[in-house]
Length: 261
Figure 1 (cartoon, one colour):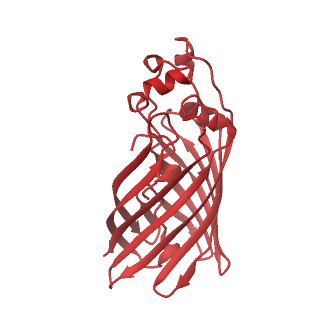
Figure 2: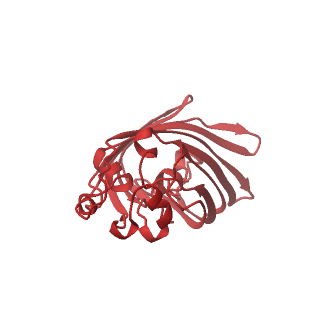
Figure 3: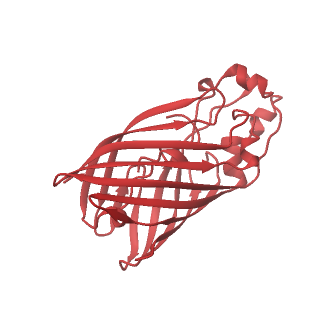
């Protein structure tokens, strides 16, 4: 998938939905692999609906973990409190050729003067606190590739509910994105402005979200995993000339099968 907001929407460990971690569904260590399909409505000009198949690969060790496009090390893990060092791919890059040239013109942009946006790699730290009341997770990330050079802070609350064979995880969260991050993926760059592109600098932005993930065992080792989410975009982002006019948020849905070793 080449649209921005990939990790807000799909993160197959966002992408394109974030794979639940071991404390959400099970405490077993080991590997989980599978395949899933995600669908989202891209906010970018001319992108429209996107259907994206992707593999799911999850590993949970005593200290090391890997979940799709992110991984890290548990620096502290008491069962109630986790402190992690985190590395996460930011798959928010996109090719200008994938956008609608006529739609960009209608928004005052010439596609020939625009640059592609690159994917990035973030590093940071996470803090999670779990109990019978649910799970609260705080994460801080910064780009280390020089793509955006931006930072992101995220806070998410998840509640685990059991209904028969189903485990569901309703969640609500909010992300703060720095000005460098939003300008790279939603604004116009200095190199583009130098070519005559109108300047657009969104500034920092707060993106709230709600969603639910669900799991149902299908035998001893197979499971169905699915979910849906909605990210509400603030005016600073929806006013971007790279986005479709009238865009308010990004809905997404995913589903797939996984096998635990």
